[in-house]
Length: 153
Image 1 (tube, rainbow, N blue to C red):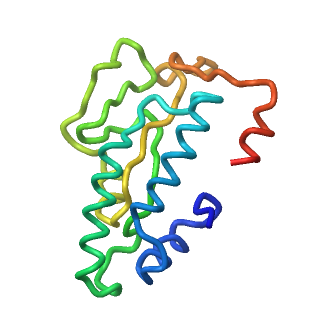
Image 2: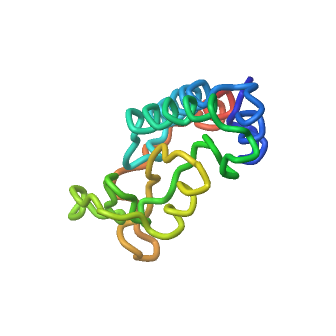
């Protein structure tokens, strides 16, 4: 089953019904992210080790908790633009000058996603700081046949 075409709530429902494991969902998500990354470089930062470790913890929690007690987006992978602070994950705001910046706290939107049970996969490119018309400093690197590549994964 391809999970990338499902909504977050549909995916959470499958997880809570124990029809798929969170590790299975995360593994497929990370495989797709790495394929897309190799072809068009949308990520500034991917956190596969953190994401898989979190998925394993939630799978254990799923075994011992009634589905109705789990948060809305339990086990659902998500990404955010590299403009939002993410605790313990590099946030560059689209600037090479800040490529070593690792915030100590999540911005409210990210904190709420995590509280809802979602798992951060990575940070997506954005233009250099909030300058209109600027190009992302870390990419992108589009290939000629990008629509064929993205359509096939």
